Structure formats: C-alpha cells, structure tokens
Length: 306
Image (tube, rainbow, N blue to C red; front, top):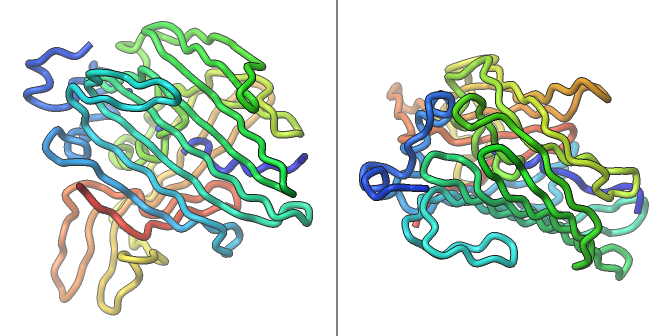
C-alpha cells in the first residue's frame, strides 16, 4: 500500500507528595507558560475527561476519534505492553478509528496512543500503535518512546518485529518546552493565550510505503489568529442550536523544519463560552472543538467526565 492514512500529527509532560496534594502538576518556568491552565483541565479532583469527535475528509464522515486525559496519583497505567505502577502525573490516551476507500480498496485503520507525563508535565513514556486492515491483510506498526531530561529514545516495530531504534537529544526541560506528538491536540486547548510560543516535538517521517524512515526533533510554534470568535459547525452534543452561539479562540500550530522544508501544520478552534438568551456562559476550561489538518477535520461531538 503506497497510500496510508496518517491522520494524527499526532494528535501534544519524580513527583513529591506535597506537590500532588496541592495539584497534579508543578511545571518549570518555561513549561508554566504552556501549562499554566493544565490543572484546571486535568486537576486531581476533576476525574477522567473523554472527548469524542467525528472525523471527516473533505466533508465526508470516515470515522471517530476519542481522546482522554486525567490526573493519576499512585495509579497503574498502561503504556504499550508496559504496566506502569504507582504512576503520578497526567495520563493521555486516544483512539482513531477510520474506514476509507484507498486506491479502490476498503481500508480500516485504528491508531491507539498512550502518553504518561510526570507531575511537572514532562513526558515520561509514549506509545503509538497503528493497525491497518486492507484486502484481508492486517499490518501493525508500533512506536515506543521514552524520555529523560536530555534524550528521547524510540523503538519502531512492524508486525511485532523490531525494525528501527534511535535516540534524539533535546534541551533540558527547564530551558526548552517539549511535547510528544501523540497528545498535541490536547495541548492545543492550553495555547489560547500564548501566541508566539514555541516548543519541540519528535516528528515521525514516513516513506512512500508508509514505513517510518526517520524521527527528527522539530520546532513547533503556536499562533493565535482570533479571540472571542464564533465557532460554527459543531456536532452531537454541541450541534448548532437556534439562539446559541459558541465563542472561542482560533489558533494555528505550525512545524518549522530547516530541511526538507515546511512540515505539517494544523488549525484549531477552541471554545471557551457560549451566548444564549443574551446571557454568556463560560466553560470551566477550554475545549478543542474543531481541528483541521490538511483535508481532514475533527469535529467535537461530546465531552464527559467520570
């Protein structure tokens, strides 16, 4: 298969008891700019948040995307095949499930991710598994990542067999913010007041056959393009209602690369409030309501906490 669905650019970070007692995160000065509102979204008392989206390509629904985030304190969490005991920090998961006709072949793709961050929002581990079924053939690709203060190490497997391993160096966390691609959509909701902010992410480069060729550490910048703007076209629980107007921030997240040129960018509309019957109601935290990456759109249908 030469044409593969690579929809998520993602999809966007130890602990001491005193810190956890106060909040789930206590970021360094650089990270505090990015994560200054993270505790409002994934605080220790807020439970597990689940966001659901319809996925559309050129306006046609092709599947769903579900992402979760929660503060964990002494919990067991799963990152790939590993069970992490007594995890403390923020835990993200996501599942993309789409079906398309590609080159005349019905192709079903499921991409699952897990990411564990410590209480300072430093990424500890990340995992991405992509399963593709086309013409009766199943192919599985996995990327297992781990972070230290100075390095990102990854292993790439195809159908359970290791085919590539590598390591990238990055700046110390206190001086340069860094994220993982697998939860970058979640982080978009934290960027509404941070125009011009830059951070680093490992970027996955694929060849024409859809195989991972290289991993590079890239500079990402976020730019706010409009605030308090109307957000239309939402679905499900957020479908357009007569007399209700959703308001929020428009922003773009861009990847800057020296070679071979510009990387993938995406735009996001983050809703922060709605107006109805001449009354404005603010959401307790911003919601990434609409994400557009190339010709693929993610449209928010529901938000729940448990």
